[in-house]
Length: 400
Image 1 (cartoon, helix red, strand yellow):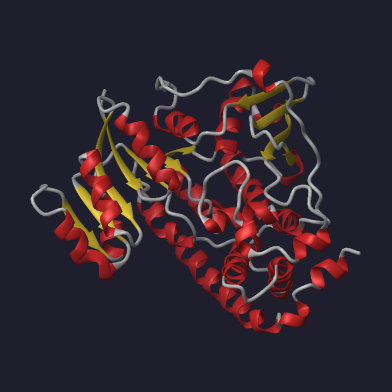
Image 2: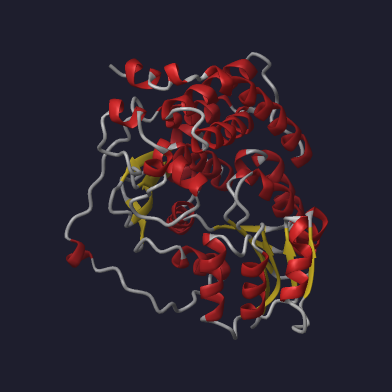
């Protein structure tokens, strides 16, 4: 049966991999709409390759360029927020939600329609507005399939038993580019060094989050909402080979794990055709050739962002929303060369501390989450100028 599909974030790394899966299985999918950010030429090329009916560009200024690039194809187009929401709401059986950052929250939420499947690759939907997002999903009977390799592996592993029998659900981390670096050296790392991920090809923001291990903290928060597991039953292991993506430890001592070569097309294919696997022409996992799989505990002294994210998950309420907002601003400042590496965690910790005294409840709606997100961002922006050149190495001194 052919299923209609919309791809939000079609020109990003997840979107490009999704296109490859779809093109390899043209008889399985009909593409309804594609959404991109600023690159009109790339979005037009994607829309034409996939035979999409509608293309929407988030950047309104690129609307004319997109229209011209699609002239004569019969593909309708639009630009700006309204066009993105229109694409998300168009009739489709399945929506792949891969717009990165908080910018993806509204269109991802708009994509939730009764009985629809949502292949979710936007962290912020669950980190910023997890309780409200999942409540709406239940109300609308939306099936959410995780696309992140870690959550997709857990989703498959959890099929081996019931939630009450789960002792630990564990996601893995490659360890990022600084896994073996001393704290003093990490403190002086440049954005270029931090964005050089050793395994995955991702955007700069996600690469920086991998370097700080904040991405693993955010993934713990996601797992809490996706699988209904408390913070005490969630954990992280560093696994440099990135072969084991998620493990479930059961009450009888057994462990079920999800393994695959590190290729995002594997979890994407699973999310698109859950319960009916697509045959993918990809290299097969050869454990004998790999020879060894290694694991280690994350060093939270060198990577304090993971500690902060765990604390936000335990605190609950609005703290994950605040944590994520502060982190996005701090990472932007780091990538712009305004602050040092450890000022990212210092900024996040300071903003979270400021808001924690208010004991704000979890946002009841996506719009409440976005309002709180902006308030926390403003708090982080006010802190950035305090991190002058003389304080860039403070993280290194603290670690001695």
